Image (cartoon, rainbow, N blue to C red; front, side):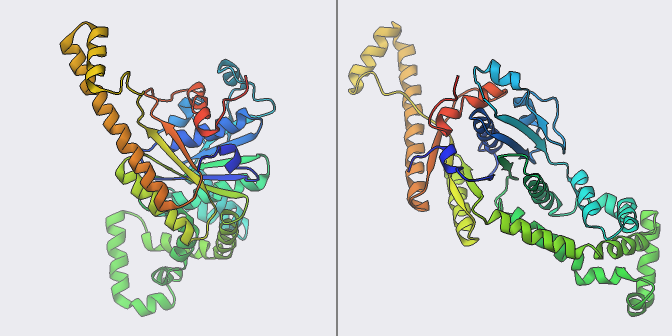
Length: 377
């Protein structure tokens, strides 16, 4: 079922792009954001892709945790008048976002200071399992709640478990509430009495190995963060409600090859199981070929040989064309199989354009395939 992105996102203020790695998901997210901005919307795109390709394609020297506006002159150079549209971009800074979360959820200034200055926190805030995904959700929620944009486009992490980021808030709360961590909350109290001499030996060994009072730092960290559990839990509930609401749409981005197709079908099932709003499917980098000059192979061979006046070159050209045609037919079969598996759903097809997208003009060149019509001149 064909459609256009603008139709899929009608009434939507959050667009979440999910999919495996290597299928052009970051480029697609940026192209959606650029296309919507070119159509008069105020749009922000949030990426957690560390490759910084997004900054390059948008003409920005770098991206940080604060949104930066794409120069309106770039739209003009691309021959596009966005009207009142604006395009903003940001790349997730996990540490900076975690610091903001602590500042927001800490019960008082002293607790905030103790956490931010804690050596365990400084090590964990950028590397804790799930922290990237959790902070992506925090950042998305924070940008959306400010109400400054018509649309926020999120480029999610690539992985087989591409929807794991939805569970990140719950997993982080479980980590802080974990039973094993209770041992560190009061090392001089019940935990120490239960652990006894063995705990003291381990503590002493850790001090010698690490060169710092690890137990004391852990105790300080978990004692201080325990007062933030309520805030984490409340925020997780709000994020879950936002992502499952009518103002959000999940778009699956995939390639036409076998493995990306399987991944897309898997993600569709996951979205259905989680009762999350599915907007549609974007199949990217599809191989296409022009129809042959003649239907009959013998006539085609003669026509190419006559045009090139070189039999050997003509043979190689025909072999290359046959390979390209076989690849295009394989892509078409895979797309048909995917459409059958996911059922009646909007499906957009973007061909392999050959050149890498490296600027705003390149992103806007995808608009005819994503939006069904070019941006207004």
